Length: 162
Image (cartoon, rainbow, N blue to C red; front, side, top):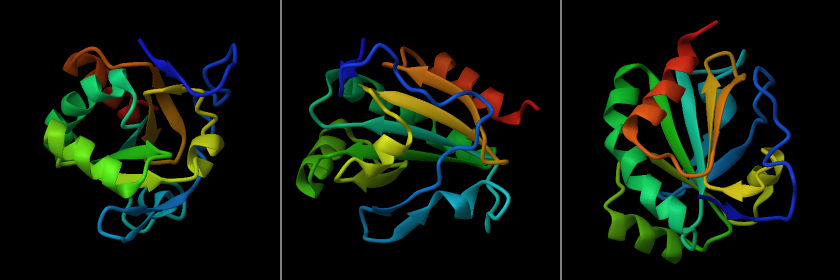
């Protein structure tokens, strides 16, 4: 199940093995997060990859999957993979209330208040999760709600395949 943002027959036009669009957004503490600092040819910290999930407070399927994502953050971090969740078009209070209610406290939380990053990723439905390799390329995409931990782990495994 997923929630549509825009009427479109295609969920997203990004293709596997394309470069993930770079972006910078602020986290809940007001710090800037730059995707290019973490993955891609110019990365400074060179993570093993990024799990990038777009969500919104009003999205029921998002509410169901956020605790699943939260539960696997430590496992992904142990493999050098950053878990980043991006809220689309909510204000800071709505984001905070949702995450507190769901007890989601482990991923890097970013705010895409005006939806510009979601536009770059051609997000048409929520939730949607992109798996971005250390090389900065999209390795896997899950459209709609992630149903269980294994589905999320399987996506993560694709970060390490050439």
